[in-house]
Length: 241
Image 1 (cartoon, rainbow, N blue to C red):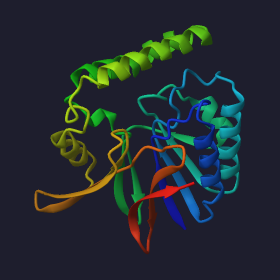
Image 2: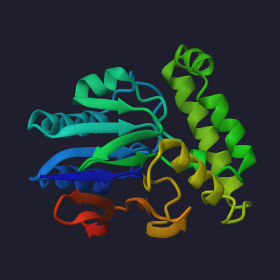
Image 3: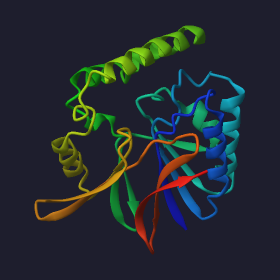
């Protein structure tokens, strides 16, 4: 049996090809003991009361996977941090904290979305702190859905404009923060997404090799995943639909 990790699909109704590709991907996970979705599964999520045929199809595909015996885990990203227990109940998923440590063959592996590692982007970190506040979320979710959707469009537009003015380094992880999180978790391996810079980084830290696997974002005809099995270990790969 194998364990799979994906992130940064940014699913949305306006990109049906990607959604169809994701459903096809799930249908072909024949050997999956578990699937971990590490954030930004949806391009935007304004609450579990959001109802759309596109969302229903995704929920149905996830439910089919979990009903087949595959354990399903999902973590908040910076775009879908309002995913809640209602969504998880409908799909059979377990909502993970960020960060989370999970064992793979008795070796602890740190799982994160990755946005909290980008500490050089001071402006974003301030916004993140506000959005993750339980009080802010409770107030926001009490607003009408139409108002929440309009707010999301505004934030998305401002975010895209702001990214064009930021340097590439600022939007990548801070190496010192990576080591700090790994020290705190007591691990030598970290898996995350968010940056859209897929890679398999290795370095030495206090005499021990460390490894940071970064998932890539999905397109209309391809995706990224990390597959783990006892025979082959952790392997990062890109695939086409």
